[in-house]
Structures are given as C-alpha cells and as structure tokens.
Picture 1 (cartoon, rainbow, N blue to C red):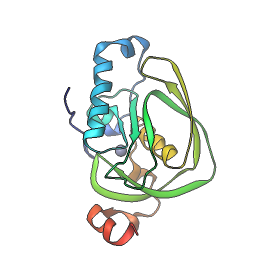
Picture 2: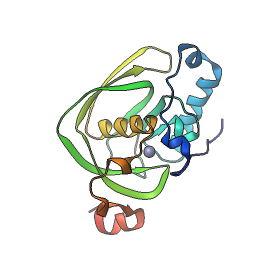
Picture 3: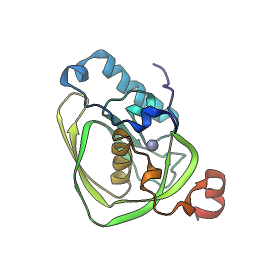
Picture 4: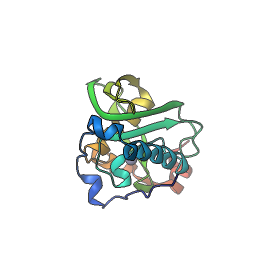
Amino acid sequence: MWILQIARLGHPVLRHPAAPVTADELASPEIQKLIDGMILTMRECAGVGLAANQIHVSKQIAVIESKKNPRYPDAPDIPLTVLINPRLTSLSVKKEVSWEGCLSIPDLRGAVPRAESLVCEGLDRQGRPLLIEAKGFKARVIQHECDHLAGKVYLDRMEDFSTLTHLAEFGRFWNK
Ligand SMILES: [Zn+2]
C-alpha cells in the first residue's frame, strides 16, 4: 500500500464537482484499492477526512475518521466511515461556528459556520445504502468532505477572514 499525493489549493481538480461512482466502478479492485489508499493517506497525514478529488480522483468518494488526532487533539472520536455518492438531505437551520483546517490548504485554520446537524445518505464501500445522522464535529467533517466533492473548500464558507490564521499563531493566540 502507498501514501497518495494530496492536491493543494490551486489545483483545478479541487474546483470541479466529482462524478458519482457507478455500482460497477465501486465493485472494481481499482476503486477498492483506492479507498484503502485514501484511508491510509488520511491516517498518515493525521486528517479527520479525505475526499477523492484531494488525491486527484474526481469521484464522489470520501473517508472520515477521528481517533486521538494530533492535528485535532480536542476532537471527539468518529469511527472509520467510507461515504460513496453522499447527499446531505436535511440540515438544521441553526449554524455553529468552529475551526477547520484542510490537508489541501496546509498550515492554516479558519472559523467556519456550518449546520449543527444533518442527515447524510449514500452508499458504503460495499454498495449498501448508508444513512448517517450527525451533529457537532462529525456533522462538520461530513459537510467539509461533501463540499470537496462539490468543488468547494472551507474558505468558500468563511464569513470572517480575520480568523484565518497560521497554525503557529493559532496555538499562541486562538486555541485557548
Ligand atoms: Zn479539506
């Protein structure tokens, strides 16, 4: 298994909506191997989520997981979840503002408003229907990854750019 190279902000693949995965594609060894590579890469880079277009594949695949993560030490645990063709079908009107970073936008953090809770529908890696109800941090991670698959990044959701901060200054001035 290998670590996949992550596309950084400015690469056009991050700005194109990803294509849905067909049942045949999902069952193929290539896509299954790709999903394994995404999980490994997310863990190696200490991410809590990774979308396929972040590794230069414009397909609607995302992986999320959070377990004692050094980049997000205060984050609650999220079990490993593979999202195929995810759709956010219900969002709370109320928004919550919290910090986000992104492996494609290294060394920065910004305060991003997101829906507090949602329902996410899609498929798991075996092609079985998946329905996830999430709130708080997990809902935030799912929205961040679904945005990637739609060609958006968290900067597009920010309302106050004065909160955009380098990680070195985040620890000093913001994360208290
Ligand atoms: Zn990201």
